[in-house]
Image 1 (cartoon, rainbow over the protein chains, first blue to last red):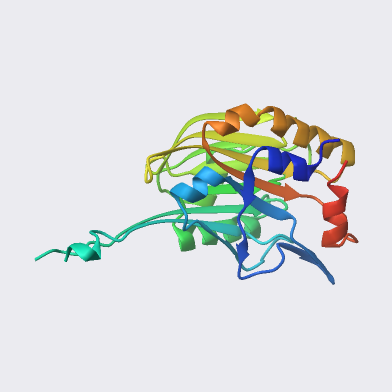
Image 2 (cartoon, rainbow over the protein chains, first blue to last red):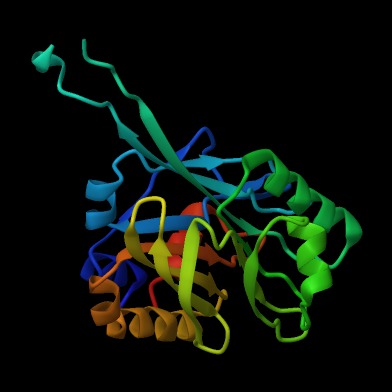
Length: 81
Length: 172
């Protein structure tokens, strides 16, 4: 039996955690995290500072998800100074 | 004397299940996001629009340089719109799978010189349809392996479902 979890595991995808907000969807008293973002492990190795933020909900039951891909180069090795 | 260099290179992507972008206030909401976050890529899931044209895209993205690809909705169900800045996100191919529930976008993230395949997935709340979806994604695993992959999933759930129930319902 193939499940969503198996699919994610077999494709070796990693879920990017959501910062700032617990849920991505809500209506009345019900809330859930039904919007998800997955990346390959290689992606995280190349761009380890990739971060996902839940934005303010407006006009929709779902929050927009903002992925900031941050590649920071800190320049020459400090030990060389 | 050595000069310290701090080079910040950032990419910015927004994915949003907007539950329809036909109304003027919805377009304004999306436009505000585009302006606020200077996006490389914007993906709207559930556009609920059967026809998308340059005029609609301009009202969202403004006059800045952009390319776009849209998967039409089936009446008022689904629909995916992806808009990107071609200077930072060089798309070589867009393809649609599973009756418009998946949009694959392939190309190079020029800022990071990185090949990518982004799959935007819209999963309806139907056990057998979802099973098909996950099976398809498993089969296309070979294609995923050669790229930096970003996969985005928006799952539809019934209003009365809790998160636990929604996750359990993912199992076919």
